[in-house]
Structures are given as structure tokens and as C-alpha cells.
Length: 140
Image (cartoon, rainbow, N blue to C red; front, side, top):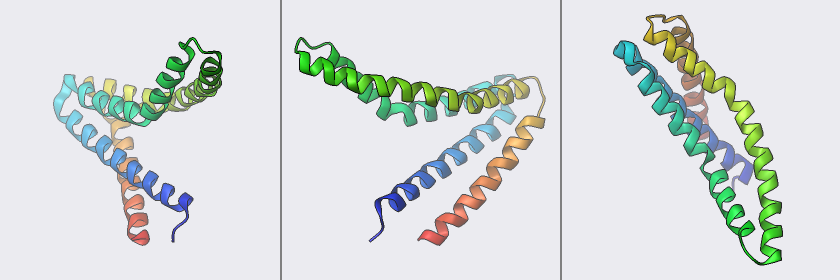
């Protein structure tokens, strides 16, 4: 029986593989759109940003709802839940900023006909997909 950590690692690899494939598809579509190149990239980036932050958002809404209660115990529980979530969200935001802005500059470059950054990113995505696919094959 596989340990929980191994199962979570496998799930995370599958999510990462799908994200890489989605980013690659968005990048290839953006290359064909010229001045509208930013749309597929930003749709992909915002989709993954929203999807990966959904659990934190739901917990934040629960915490805010508890804090809005008139009962002192619920307010304390909500505050105790909200403070670490806020710190976590700030850390995630700082960690994801380079990823977001790199995609932003790739999109702007493609909109103005510059493909050097997009070429490098495509090569990185292809390498990541190939290595992650090999890892998936070993685990099955």
C-alpha cells in the first residue's frame, strides 16, 4: 500500500504535467495569433492560478464567515484560521510572481513579433513534459 506522501506526490506530478501541456498548447496557439497572442496565454495562466488557489479561497471564505458571527468562539476560530491563510496567500503570491511575469513578457514579446523568450519557454516545457511523462511511466 502506497504511503500518503507518495500518492500526493503522484497527484501533484499529474497536475503539473497537465499544466505544462496546457501552457504549451496556449503558447503554440499564441504564436499563430500575432497581436492577439496574449489572450490564450493569459487564459491559461489565470485558469491555473484560480484552480490552484481554490482551496485557499474556500477556506478564506469560511474563516471570514466565522469571523462575521456574533458568537465569540466562532470569531476566534475564524481569526485563527484567517491569519495563517493570509500569510500563506502572501507567500504564494510572492512565489508565483516570477512565473506570472515571465508569461506576461512572453505574451508581450509575441504580440510584437519577438519569439526568443517563447522559444526558450517552449523548449523548457517540452523537456519538463518529457521528463514528467517518463516519471509517470515508471510509477504505473
